[in-house]
Length: 299
Image 1 (cartoon, rainbow, N blue to C red):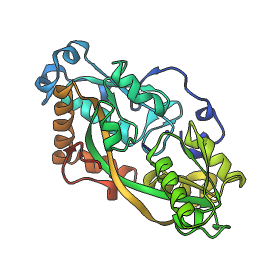
Image 2 (image 1 turned 30 degrees about the horizontal axis):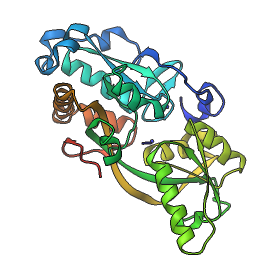
Image 3 (image 1 turned 120 degrees about the vertical axis):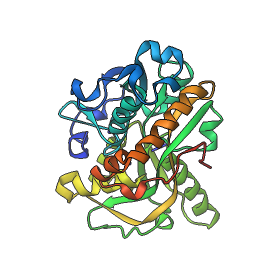
Image 4 (image 1 turned 90 degrees about the vertical axis):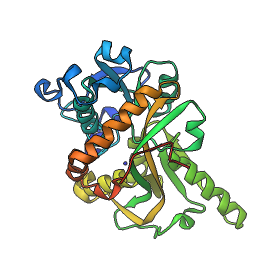
């Protein structure tokens, strides 16, 4: 999984274009003085694998269309994950560079070593772990139901989606949630959910805004951000409680345990020095903070 441009821009512009190949983009706000790595003098440099030390770069795969977790503002990549990547780079002494790609291509890119890490609001679960990924868990979020402002269909919970059309981003935990609920509807003798899956959540939001879908299932921070910003807060609202809160993880190939452990140590250092809390507070998502950093803590 799935909370990439502020949504008001995303609905109007290029995030609706499917990304067929990885595009290398420097993460953060491109201020070289802020992102220059400290090299061997960095606190955790010695924990990195030798090939990463030599390259001086960690290649990070991310779908940069998922505000506030990762998105573009004036052409610059920003958000929770890019800010954490910049902060990790300073701890580890190398630059973190984000490669913008489709969400459903990220695990393949990791396994083929086109990237070193995944930072893309990806939910840690056993299925993804079974595909050769270890996760350094750094944030917690559940699924939320996003509806049109005023909630014209009176949606209050997943049960109200039986017989309705739901738009969402495919290959995410939110899609799995919709599929499970559709089966629940069927078992209860109710109409199943019509699930419309899209490459990018912006496409799902367009369907919801137009009334072609009654809801979009989304990660809580993303749903809250869209409700706050799209159309000046007049397009959408969040209904009900968070569903099945889970852990976001930074994905690392299972055969790269040294990099995994270095990233874990980096997040722990950011929690200890207060930088982690500062980043989450900046995006008003401090309720998603974890108290301790786990590996493969998802279910």
